[in-house]
Length: 113
Length: 109
Image 1 (cartoon, rainbow over the protein chains, first blue to last red):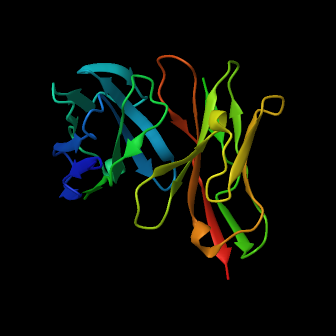
Image 2: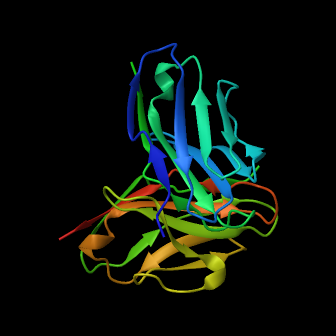
């Protein structure tokens, strides 16, 4: 089985711009979660989708949004980028609605200058 | 709110020495606990979960509900164990996985 894929792998943006990141889950997985990983804060939960519905949302400002498509692929969008948004953004998929075992993608490294 | 605490940012041990990575959690219910590992240049991956009570790569972890701990242990560290380790928690139902901030294990030859 192919693993979770994320595109792009690296991205450099300037403050004020917006960005869209994409995640393709493992075939058959219907749950997708997004995390922000930074050296200081570790892994912080952004949101979780199951069958195109957002089930949970983390404590991030409204500039962070996401969606899931009918084929389970997911995108997250960050508008009005700030320097502090520089991070590795990880996507994870799981088969069941309860995210007991998650399979992670390689991440998208976002640098905001 | 659930919280997972990993008190050590960095743990250095010599090859062959025992390893214990600490994890404490705060949650009043009956959570499920996990250890995830991220080796250099690899993806974050599940190492073990408490309900399976198995040993993976020589690592074990016991859930101590009285002390609300889920420490990861290995009797003899190997150089290939060097990685970032994250403790994580989920309760039953509709909540996301909550991670600790991680501990970097460095095994010195």
